[in-house]
Length: 560
Image (cartoon, rainbow, N blue to C red; front, side, top):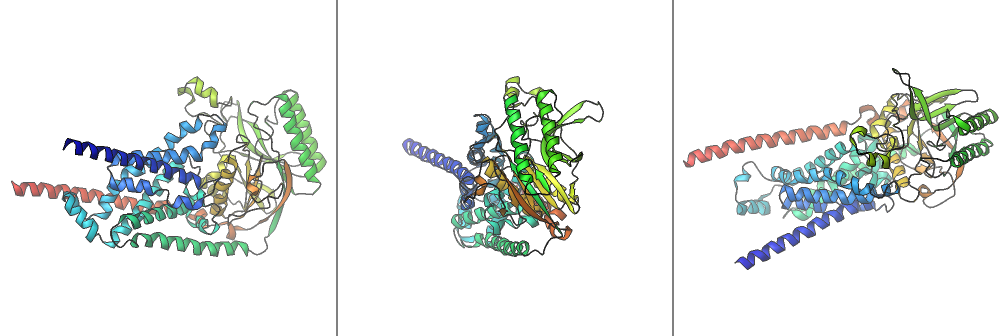
């Protein structure tokens, strides 16, 4: 008997080990659906091992498996962070794994509430098995499928407030028909569909009878999204002639990351930017655009570097007579103390003066500022600190580029936040310009991942996007998610181009009726709807639990 128990224990733990490894593998499938592999189909089955563990084991083991899934996703999809410091992916992956761990920990309770009737917790194992195999109603299968997708999407939404990079929606950035739903629901509508397909496929294998039933809901919403996608793409492709256009020249400097630039590196950056601009001016653009902080010193800097920068910059403006929108590190006075603060800014100049400015609002933690600086060890601060904390901006207003063109500016990391781009669109802008500098990541897939996030933002906002990057991804993103008019050499994958180049793009600029998408008008209504559903679910669970306790008490009193 003892030998049989030992064998059962060994089999059980070996099974758990295989399941834990399969959850980690599921997370890596999620990562494989992102750039550079772009296996977008893989994400539709990536959650299956986590769902199985949540339905077959108690919450502690399920949570551990969900954490492993999250670690597998985060480590491989954010492995580009090794180019900053080799250890960063090892630090960030265990933290990001906490969100899917929380989802997995709730799955056992979700299963019991959605699949079994009130009072089922008092049943013995044999009765539960009999009910599950022979009496499980079809509507409870759908209830489980929908509830699992709702729960996952809402937990992902909470993560996006801290680290929005590479959610489920980004895996589908090249699936143009599916992602058009973002113009209605925001990116979370795409993520919800992906999660629902996962729960539906899982239910088709997990339930004993009526296996097709769990697939009904994901099939319907996927078909609906694809039909809407076809309609939305045709709408964008058949737009009437625009009221005006903007002919913009983009400078892609392809300069290395210069966190602590030498004088030689500063002079090289100044020369590259001004010389490319002078060449581009011969094609008569209406606006020249520089990427984010290509020149690694502020225009107001002292010393010989600052003098050379100002002289060449002013000379360029005078000689070309073309407005210049430049991503620059800049200064501004503090409102109270009068001290000078440093900002990451986009500044619009004409031939005589500064005529528009946007200061980056959403800064990169541990890149542009150090959260909780005074509480962290100095060794960690030294590893990530750039020597100063940048001051965040607070003005969402667009910049008037020319009559009829009101451009909102997003700087680098800001282009991945749906709420921020929506705020821009709400303030009467009719064009989005994104300035980026991915020089921190010269060899990894980060620039392509960055572009993938930007595609979703353009669909959400309904705005044409001009994207100017230091080392790739410079071109136009249309409101249906098409990356076009890219500059540089022709290639099958233009988003992978990393070379020094300059080119002209022409962008139509439309009035309000085109840009006001449902998402821009009503914001995260879809998340609110899912939240109401979850609130009703939790309320039902609490009522169910209370009634069950009362029933148990009455049963015990009756037996006495």
